[in-house]
Image 1 (cartoon, rainbow, N blue to C red):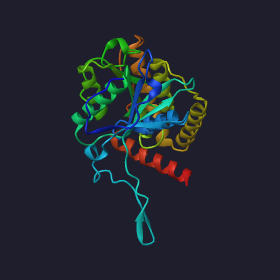
Image 2 (cartoon, helix red, strand yellow):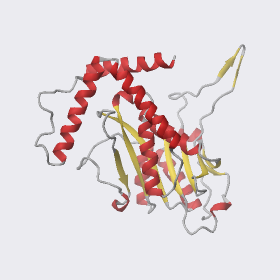
Image 3 (cartoon, one colour):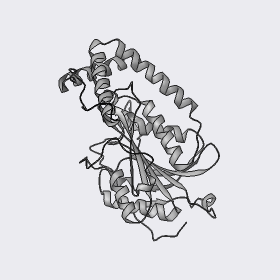
Amino acid sequence: MVDQPRNRDVHIIDDVPELRGRENGPILVVSLDGFLDAGRAGAMATDHLLGQAESRVVASLDIDSFYDYRSRRPPLSFVEDHYESYEAPRLVIRIATDAEGEPFLLLHGPEPDLRWEAFAVAMRHVVEHFGVRLTVQMGAVPMAVPHTRAGHLTHHATDKRMILSENIWSGELRVPASAQSLLEIRFGEWGHDAMGFVAHVPHYLAQTEDKTSSLRLIEALQVISGLRWDNSELERAAAANRDDIAEQVAQSDELQQLVKGLEEQYDAFHAARSGEATSLLAEDKPLPTGEEIGSEFERFLAGLEEDEN
């Protein structure tokens, strides 16, 4: 660890004596709530990591500097005639351990709404203070993919040597920015290794819980970091989640048609990539319109809410 001049946007609470004298610095895992969390895949992966062993906060960011309270109003309780139990948002770095007692750092909390560049500088202070050797981000986005096919992850990194496998597309894509993506860009410019994974969540599951995508993120994190966790509970939860989704789909002819259309487009795309087909489009099987997808999506969510009630 390196002593750094104080940064007003981050407060180092604990110097983490167990990290001193180690040959290699720790991994920093980044998982922020908000834009890159379709299906709550990242949030559930974070809960899984923190549920494996005890953790403690070692640094916190000044939430008032980064959070827009009016766009994401935190909840509080009104009890009879007074307010109480305000749930203040927190953006913190914790130290935890994997199943074998290996320590790692975890940044979690709401994605900053404001001052992204200052957020990146504050996180640079954290990385250099604790001697972080690699930052790994987890995220998830909605995609036009069926839940019945093998899910994919988009890989990204500041250096190609850290890419685990080739992405399913090539060339340039223009996508909305996020605080996490800017953080990776700045870390690369500052000479700090950073990479991550974005899970492809079926768009009709984006507002529910996609535990299968959470499991994929954890498995990819294990491969790149060398850390290990007991994933048996998450594996069972993901299997039960898939069964629930299959049951919901079976109850709706329209949703079955939507999933079938996505399956055919998915299969045609991958057949074309492998050289088994010459077209990316399935023959005579057009995808549902945007209105049809939206309508079935709303019905799907309504069905899930009824089951929960």
